[in-house]
Image (cartoon, rainbow, N blue to C red; front, side, top):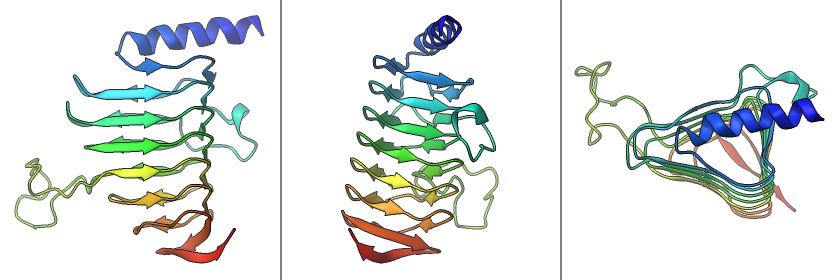
Length: 189
């Protein structure tokens, strides 16, 4: 217990030096990779669990939690009592995750296509006008099963569950169970 408190204090200090806003009682299993762009916002709420090693998840994870903002206007906001297991979250604009969410092993959430659709100079084109970006919102009490992919412009309504391995390309209403590629509503809770 003392070891975990010392480790958590060191993690908090490291993130504080990167201007990451941290709530109280954050639990660290392993070391997350948190890379904010200059002047961007990363906020982690109270009692959030960041599982970056398999000791925090019985299924195991492929990599540590990764939180990355790409521009000074980008923001990642994670609500209170939310757990992330080896999740990757990347924001060019905004990714907001509500309170009491379960973000399963190896989930990926991105609000950007990362590259332009036009083939001209696709690899090196960094023009934000050419690269599609739309905010992502995960509302309160959502459960994303392991290996879910959430794409740009999606809102997942409160209390919803997304089945493991699903690709969420369109918004899902509240109180829904959805799954597949692309994810569709299977039933309501």
